[in-house]
Amino acid sequence: MSRTRTAVLAALALVAGVSGPAVAVTPSSEAAVSAIPCTVDYKIQNDWGAGFTAAVTVTNNSAAKSSWAVKWSYAGNQQVTSYWNSKIAQSGTAVTASNETYNGTLATGGSVSFGFNGSYSGTNAIPTAFTLDGVTCNVDDGSGGGGGGGNGGGSGTRVDNPYSGAKVYVNPEWSAKAAAETGGSRISNQPTGVWLDRIAAINGTSTSMGLRAHLDAALAQKGSGEEVVQLVVYDLPGRDCAALASNGELGATEIDKYKTQFIDPIAAILSDSKYASLRIVTTIEIDSLPNLVTNTGSRATATANCDTMLANGNYVKGVGYALAKLGAIPNVYNYLDAGHHGWLGWDDNFAPAATLFKQAATSEGSTVDDVAGFITNTANYSALKENNFTINDSVNGTSVRQSKWVDWNRYVDELSFAQAFRTQLVSVGFNSGIGMLIDTSRNGWGGSARPAGPGPTTSVDAYVDGGRYDRRIHVGNWCNQAGAGLGERPQASPATGIDAYVWMKPPGESDGSSSAIPNDEGKGFDQMCDPTYTGNARNGNNMSGALPNAPLSGHWFSAQFQQLMANAYPPLS
View 1 (spheres, rainbow, N blue to C red):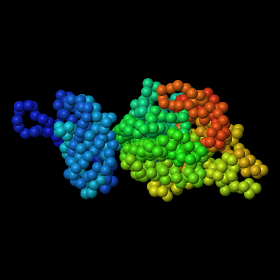
View 2 (view 1 turned 180 degrees about the vertical axis):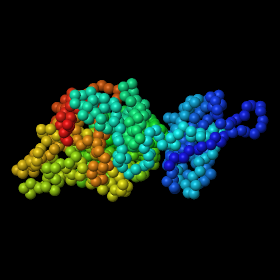
View 3 (view 1 turned 45 degrees about the horizontal axis):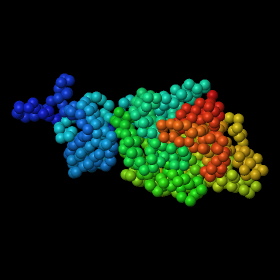
View 4 (view 1 turned 180 degrees about the horizontal axis):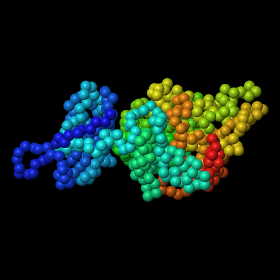
């Protein structure tokens, strides 16, 4: 339930030289409004009896400011417990909210919004007086409507599965590219993730929408129901330490820049009460923590860059900070990346990964309550369900686990892995209500190469290779894979423990360029994207299986998009 302060309580300063008592004034003209030094709108967006979420908007009608501090006092025992878009300090009943480094500028007539969670017992009365830099402000009467619920319909109430009963945002930029392709209109209305993969993506560029533009478009799409917006938060220092195609713009030591110039501005926008009615799903830092599990230390797959990120702790710190900042916003649902079965499904990776994820989720002020769930197979190709063999099968006395394809893994597909990994995550301390997302944007593996049944039983390799849907040369191949197809269409609650199948990776966006391409996006060249590359320890020294003539990661790759449609499973009508 939303509540807002409804009376104009503060007094205006009297004209200089005139004595007498202060008089409460309700502005009735533009001139009167300009005489009010500041206005505060304090809304309680959610109150569950022992705690609450509040949103505060301050409008400055005096001289422009380069920093600001808002103060108020509580009549009861309210205590601020977490906050965003400001720094909040409390002494007894007195509270001070001051600007962050990125929102100190407050122009004449400009506004700034911040929010916080609090606890209390007894009553939760709204404060009656506020000051901005020591000057008493008027309290907004809330006549603008909305009551803090954001624009459009929808309850704005936190739910167990954000996808349940909700539409999902269709990114108009991706949709336009898909629709421009021959046959693309068959899927151009599907929801896909919005990738925030560099600082410039937050505000947008001359050729791309920024975060606010996407959120505004989502409000326009949602109508009177519920709507999910899917964001990929992806700009860690030393990003993707084992793959050069998606290296980021921040160096290994630039954790402070990541916090203040990337996560903080995202949190500031997402906490705007205008967007409180949206369900915002954030996918946190693809590939980062899994790399610390498998590509460090004495392993044959280790890289110097991953060893550096393990040693300096900045992946763990960055992920923890992102979870804490974004998780404090009531309508944000954080899903942490959990690789895929062909990465973390082995015994020596499975449990250590869950333990590392718990470490990250309880660092930098984060708790497990900031994690709504996990996502697997993001930007990967692992089949959702292999129907022609199971991990328990044997051929002539030899276990499927001993086949070259499975290679002692305990899982053969994403659904079995995601469900089992969820159980493991709960066992190390994550909440029992967490849900899993599986990215099915490129794991359909249909078309003429899709096996109709099990392979021959002449050998375990013939049995597995003849029956598997996933037609990659090796399960470690990840870049622009030849022969891939669209997978299951996005849908909510498709299986036990699974919150949704999603297309977080937009089909048709390249994984990386086939050869080195100079660019100003901080993206390198990875040989795994070169179709002539003969491999490394991470893919068993096999050919890369990549398509030729690919552009930079994230850029439109028409040939791949056409192939994904042609090989879709379920097929496109």
